Amino acid sequence: MALDLDTRDQLIETIRRFVAERLRPLEHQVAEDDAVPESIVAEMRELGLFGLSIDPEYGGLGLTMEEECLVAIELGRTSPAFRSVFGTNVGIGSQGLAMFGTDEQKARFLPRIATGELITSFALTEPEAGSDSAAVTTRATKDGDHYVLNGAKRFITNADKAGLFTVMARTDPDKPGAKGVSAFLVPADSPGLSIGKPEQKMGQHGAHVCDVIMEDVRVPAENRIGAEGEGFKVAMQVLDRGRLHIAAVCIGCAERLIADCVTYASERKQFGKLIAEFQLIQAMIADSRTEAMAAKALVMETARLRDTGASTTLEAAAAKYFASEMVGRVADRAVQVFGGAGYIADYGIERFYRDVRLFRIYEGSSQIQQLIIARETLKDYAG
Ligand SMILES: Cc1cc2nc3c(=O)[nH]c(=O)nc-3n(C[C@H](O)[C@H](O)[C@H](O)COP(=O)(O)OP(=O)(O)OC[C@H]3O[C@@H](n4cnc5c(N)ncnc54)[C@H](O)[C@@H]3O)c2cc1C
Image 1 (tube, rainbow, N blue to C red):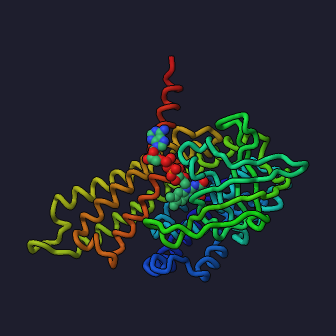
Image 2: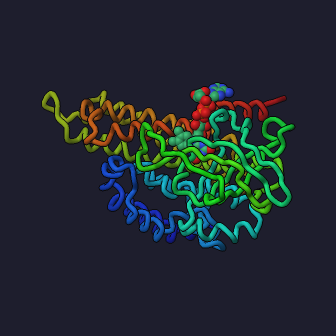
Image 3: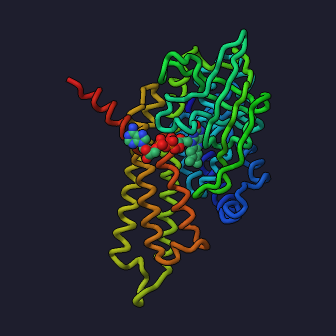
């Protein structure tokens, strides 16, 4: 159920203050250390950030999609690595279970996911199955009342901290593609499961991705999410939702960068004038503002549509595509507005430029969003 408006505004204000006062001062340090301090993680727990999307019955805040997007916009106003700490618990790591799990599965895991005691990860991508995610080769072979999992997952966010993975694995090797895939809840301490070293990334330092290797990992059959062969459907529905959240984060990042541009342009003088007075600088600010507003309208409209129970596959893909490309252009203009300073680490703009690059790649690249948008449009307009 939606929060009443006062409560919603209070929540947004609390998060805005947390971002401004607690997270922003640490941006540089987190990037340098490639780690978010434990004291900040503890504050995130207290604020309920790990449980934003989880039903209050299991200890979460149970936000609507519209409310979650408003929160995600606030979180976007600082380094995206902070959001990653709890991002998988709010989205891809928990939602397979939240949407398709049995009451027993939910009662077993969701309360600890909501508090942040248990970190969750979503393990779909493999070395040979990225955009073509239905091609997963990780095997889950039935053995009595267990499945035995073998395979390797790649680039899994928070894998080094996760206590629980949602793993997509092939239960039916005779069914190639989506139909042979099932989803499993796999505890990280399962014998045979190991985690690779965190990858060196272009940006979002402080957030980690690792390989997850499974060698004869025995998973009780009761840990399967949904029916056999429904795993790909679970993954796609989780991503449908996750894409809206990511699109909202892109808006927050864009608004932050626009504000930084205005501040800098209002202080920096060239040719005896503030650069904010130059119309060519103003044009860049105007383009960034317009595009951020357009993305916000699309994301919030889609979130409200989703809250009515309607399918938003097309709209969520369009929102993620537009917002992630938009923030890339905004970050590029921000470097330009800052001039040489935009290229120098101390100003933080080049860091954002690198950080936002990821949004065009994960949870479905821009090309994959284009394919979804085109597929749905061709269906919609088929005579
Ligand atoms: C930091 C980070 C975090 C991640 N976190 C997770 C996670 O938590 N869980 C998880 O499961 N995965 C995660 N991923 C994986 C991510 O979702 C994939 O990297 C992404 O889906 C792209 O797959 P790929 O890297 O194999 O690229 P590829 O699929 O090899 O794509 C390479 C290029 O080809 C394009 N392309 C592919 N197919 C087509 C097509 N049919 N038409 C046109 N162009 C096409 C792509 O758009 C891209 O430009 C993460 C990745 C990164 C980098």
